[in-house]
Length: 360
Length: 186
Image 1 (cartoon, rainbow over the protein chains, first blue to last red):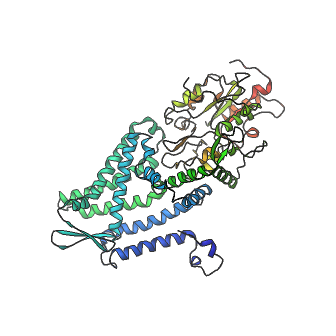
Image 2: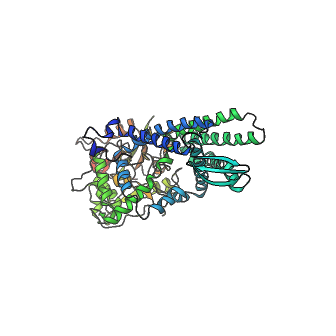
Image 3: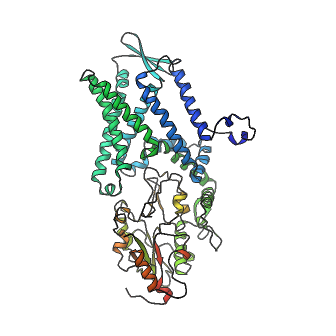
C-alpha cells in the first residue's frame, strides 16, 4: 500500500510529497484503482448502469470510513507489529490452509458450537455472494448483453467471457444469485436472533446497538432485496421504483456503518491468519524458556514484542529478581504472585499446581 | 452503590468453591477462569485464590492487536470479544499475573470478566457469592476503608493492592491477619 515512503521522504521531490499522509495516499490510490477498473470494465464508460449510481457513491464513502478505521487501528503498536511481521510471512506453506480454515469454513466457530457455525456460514457466505455480484455490477466490471436473441453474453472486465442460454441453468443462477444470498442471510440472521432471544448467556451480555442493530440491518437489506424480486414477478413491477430506493438506502447505510460496529470484524478477520503465521514461524525459530522452571512457553520474538509494546505504554514489569514478568511461564507467573503476597517463594517449589479445574 | 471485589487472602481454606462457582456463571461455558494455589504445599495447607485483578491500566488490553479486550464502565476488564479475538495470545504474555486462558480449538482467549452480567447490576460475582470463608468479598469503598481502619497496624503495612502489585487494580487485595500475627478461625 505505502512502501518506499521513508526512503524517499527526504528528497522533497518524491511523489509521496503530493499527499498529506499515508492515509490520504492509500485512499487516493484505492479510488484511482476503482476508477481505472471501472474504465476498463465499462469499455470506456459506455456500459454504466446508472440505476446503481447511488451504490457507487455509497461505496466511495465506505472506502473513506474503512481506511479511517483501519489506519487508526493499525497505528496501535501491537497491531502494527502483527501486521508488519505477518505480511512478511505471508508466503508460508501453511498460509493457504490457515486462511481456508479461518476465512472460508470458520472451523474455530464450529468448535464454539455447531448452531453458531451454521448461522455464521449462512450469514457470512450469503454476504460474500451478494458482494461478489453487487460490486462488479455497480462498477460495470460485469454486465450482460444480448446480441443474438435468446442468448446472453456475460462481459467481465470488458471481455466477452461466455454466451449463455437465457433460459439455461447458468443464467438462472446469475439472475437469482442475489435472491439466494438474501435467503441465506435471512435464514442465518433468524438463527442468530433466535439464539440471542433464547440463550440466557447471550441475553446477559448483549446490547441492542452493538449486537442487534447489525442483524436488523442485514435483515432490512435482505428483505427489501427479496421484495424487489417479488414486486417484479408477482406485482408486475408495481411499487418497484420506490422499493428499489428503499433497498438502495438500506445497503448504503449498512455499508457506511460496516467499519465502525460489530461488522468491522469482517475486514479485520484476515489478521488472524497473520497472527497464526507469526506464532508458527517464530515458534519454529526459537522458544523462550521460563526463567523459573525452564519450560518453553512462547517464541522469543513474541516475548520481546510484548515487552516492547508494554514499554511504549509505560508498563514495566521488571522484577528485582532480574526478570521481566513476560519471561515467566503462566503457572510460574501466578505462583510468583502468590509468593509476593505471602512472602514465601512459592514459585521456587518444584510441584505441579494443584487441582485448578474444580472437578474434585 | 459501586462495590468492588476484595480479597482477604489468608482466610482461604482451599475448598475451591470459587472455581466451581466460576464454571456456572453465564458466559463462562462450564470452564473456570480463576485459580487456587498452595502457598507452601510440603509444609502447610495455606492456600490463596488468584483471579484477574482488573488493572486500571490493563497490560492485556494494551497488548491486544485486535482491541478485543474491552474495559467495562464499571472498571471490569472483559474477556475477549469472540468476533474480534485473533488468537495471537499477546495478552497471556503481557498479563503480570498470568491470568488469561487460551483455547486453541476455538482460537479464543477467555479470562475473568468479574461475571459482568451480574456485577454490572450490582450483584456480586459468582466466586464472591459462594466463598464460605470470606476470602472473596464484595464491598463498597467505605467498607474497604473501614477494613483498613480495623486492621490499622501503625507500621504502614496495610497490604492492599499497590505496593505489592504492579499497578493500580480495581480488585483490592489484603493480608491483614498474617501481618498482625492473628490466627483466624473459620
